[in-house]
Structure formats: structure tokens, C-alpha cells
Image 1 (cartoon, rainbow, N blue to C red):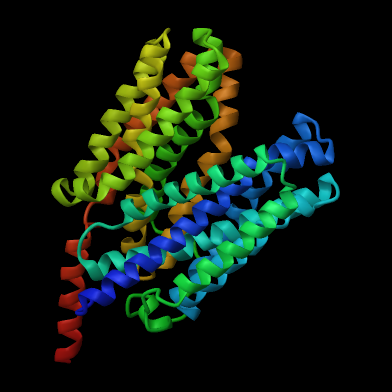
Image 2 (image 1 turned 60 degrees about the vertical axis):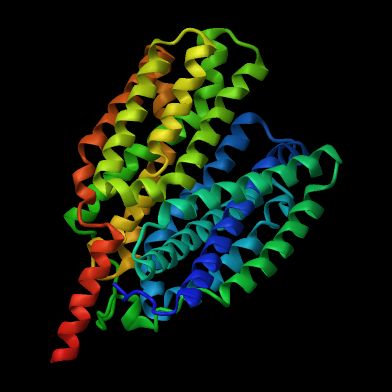
Length: 407
């Protein structure tokens, strides 16, 4: 890893720049989500056609993310992040411009591909900022992403209520986020080019099957993302179908889940600093499993809503910590993060259909029994993240630097 920065003020500015990039990425996602109904009505899409189109961002991301590690290594993380966050802001304007379903699917494929690549690049920058600080940062950065998503969605709700054309709203948001992202990009931490981007490894980087430690870390992330996707997509339906609640009460389940996850991420760095990565992930797995089991047995919203909130709290820090662990498990941080993200985000495709299939064959409580099993699994597999604490990485970096200077 890169040695910690000696200038504290410079380190803080760099971390703030990375945080703004995370917020921009989250705001773009939140903005788009609020205008999906407008796009559906504008194109006259059926539920099935819309569902097919909404698969395209995940497909695009999964196809493009593995390439990002190579780009980060070759051109440096700061350069790639600046370019990709600007490109992602611009792609926000594309979906409402689509004249038909085929064009919408293509626009969303590009939107998802650039989003996924920007995600990897900015997480590589977050890992660099964390290493230089010598203390946990990644969980808080993902918390800022959640806050950005909330701000973007709030603006989108206001635009929808004011009946503003989504082409105008998302076009304006794209411009604002492009400017903010470019300003933040100028202050991103420098990794010194390809050699430093690869943790001092000057050899060319090519696409390759990730090593076993990265695969295990990715599986931990997969379990957490599966629980996230299942809860986010099905919590309101669960309360309506299993507990017979009103639509408003059902919506409160997602609110509790989202706020618990955002709060867990914002406070997660302090927990990691006190307990360490492995213990934090194990504790999160226990909390998430307790929440999933509570959901399975609950038949009233008084138990169901807290159950979903516990799932959100338990999984909050797992993906940020898995990204950090993946970046430190191999010589090239971007490659490790890309591999973990590709495996973990695959759960975003698997979760909705798996939950629906189990519910069709058995019941929704049985489907969330699967969620409980997966959260227990990542608690058991937390040891795969061992050795990824930033303080340990900083010490290893200093040792390698001293050895290099003595030669």
C-alpha cells in the first residue's frame, strides 16, 4: 500500500474529494430511480417490458467492471475516476431520451456499465485515502454514497410532484453532478501513475481469474448483497402479503431498512477501528441473521419492520469492508476490488428471482429463511477478510518501503 500522507490537511482534502465523488455517484442513482415511473408512462411499457429493461444496468455493470482494474493500473486511479464519474453523470441524461424500449435497454446498459466502472475506480481511491489515513474510511464513504442517493431521490420526488419533464430534470442533474464531480476530481489523491496504482508492481496488468482469497472475499460480499437485494425488493411486499398491512405501513419497512443501513455505514468506521474487520463482519452477520429470523417468524409489522432494520444494520459495513479486503489481497488494488464487486453484485441479479421462486414454491417466510442462511454464512466466512485492517496495511507498506530504500 501507499505510505500514509505526511500532510494532514492534504489527506483530509483528499478524503473529502473522494467522499464527494461517492455522493455524486449515489445522487445519480437516486435521481434515476425516482423517474422510472415517468419513463414507463412516456414509452407506454408493460411491467414485463420495464422489468427487462431494468435488468440492463446490472448486466452492463457486470460486463464492464472487470476491465476497470486494468484501466486503474495503466492510467492511475485519479485519472480514471475523474473520467468515469464525469461520464456517469452524463449518462444520467440518456434513459429519458430513449424513444422506444430497445433504445431504453441500450441506454440503461451503458448507464450501468459506466456506473459499475466508476464504482470500482472510486472505491480504489477510497482505499488509497484509507491507507494514507491509517484508519478505517471505507464504511463512511459508502454511507456518504447512501446520503447522496437520498438527496438525489428527494430532488427527484420534488421534480415529479412539480410535473417536471424527466428529460429536463435528469439533464439538469447530469450537468450539476458533472460539474461537482469534476471539481472533486481535481483534489483526488494521486497514486503516482501505473506503478504506484499497482502497489509498487510495475509489470503490466491483464485480465485474469481472481485468486482463491479474492474469491472467498467476493462470496462474503455476495451473501451480503443478496440479503440487501432481497430485503430492498421484497420487504414492502412481505408486509402486504404476509402481514396484511396497508401500503403506507408496508413502505415503512423499506424506510427502516434503508435508514438502518445508512446509519450503520456512517458509524461503521468507528466500530471497525475498535473491533477490527473480522469481528465487525461477524457481529454484523449475527445481527443480520437475527433480523432475518425475526422476519421469518413475524406476523405483525411491530416485529417485521425492526427485523428488516436489523438486516440493514447487520449488512451495512460488509460490502465496504469486502472491497477493502479485496483491494489488499492482491498486488493491484483495482483488480482485487473489481473481482470482489463482480462476484458480490452478481447477487443483485440472483436475489429478486430466487426469493420470488422460493416464495412461489413455498412461501415468503421460507424465502427469508434462505436470507438468514446466507447472512449466517458470511458471519462464518468473515475470516476471509483477515489482515485487511488499514493500520496493518500501513505498517506493511512502511516495511516494504524501508526494505526498498535499503537496497
